[in-house]
Image (cartoon, rainbow, N blue to C red):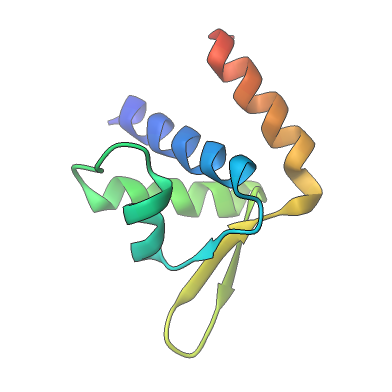
Amino acid sequence: MESQDAGVRHSILDYLVRHPGAKDTREGVINWWIAKPCPDERIADQALEALVAQGWIVKRDTASQAIYSLNHARVQEIQAFLANDRQGT
């Protein structure tokens, strides 16, 4: 489960770095931001909440549902994380 969660987090961050203006709902994140189909949506929920808690993703609550987007102030930190993650460090 941990490796799936890490893979989903990586996929979300990678998408946001490539599409920094992206904003979407939970369903949009699951359908568009995650590279592979997520076998368990709870993993996507956990990954999103972990990234929000870490400050890398901004969650804006609206009247109908939450909207997720990149925290632009942390882009360099995210890029460094992704580069290190790709290298396996």
